[in-house]
Length: 131
Length: 138
Image 1 (tube, each protein chain N blue to C red):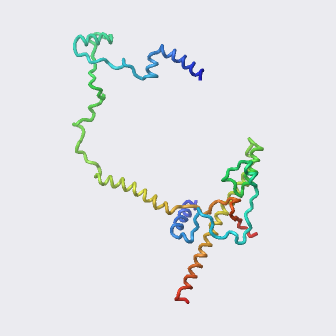
Image 2: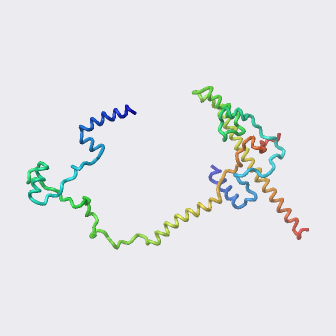
Image 3: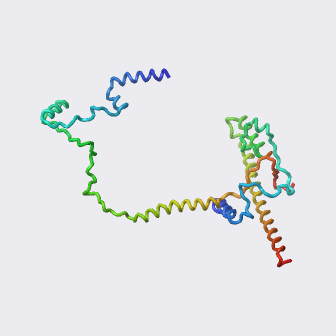
């Protein structure tokens, strides 16, 4: 609710007014992602996903849970309600994925603010008044 | 397909013997629905009365003038006000219309540049030559 009534409009206005410190949601992060973080872990293999005919848009870092969920549904059909645990795990993974993207945005924004401040400081220190 | 045609044949046979059904279902109209020409002379009048099986004294034909509507005289010159004035002047109504259209288009153009979005970066997919990570310290 907060997103719809405030944040999302504000994001758009910020992107319009201050594009130098606001990340664009359509573009990949511009900073080096490898700043002391281990790489993301992909568990499901390409062959598994292909043989299970997982749609391309679902072949993300949660695909192994989706595979488990689909297998469970197939085994238990028509009692698909038995797979509530698998479904819950999968949706939680998707939620975490979205959370990561939000964190990624915030990280990008803070780094942009930081580099902009550094640029300004450098500019002012280079001016003849200060030297 | 043949069974369909066969069943159609059955209904056709049945319809052929019910002319009223054929007209009402297939054609909706029949030349006999239209009255003959208006009888002008006494002999024509007598012939028409005989055609409809009526005694001459009871036969009173309608005078159908060239396909006029039944209520053609609802709005004629005596009732229609040629000098009627609009509630608002014409320029005002045009301004209202164009203001609405261009105003809406202007708002659309403005918010093409300022678009709202949730604060997330694009979805991450593996094996695309990009480095992804979780935010755990180890």
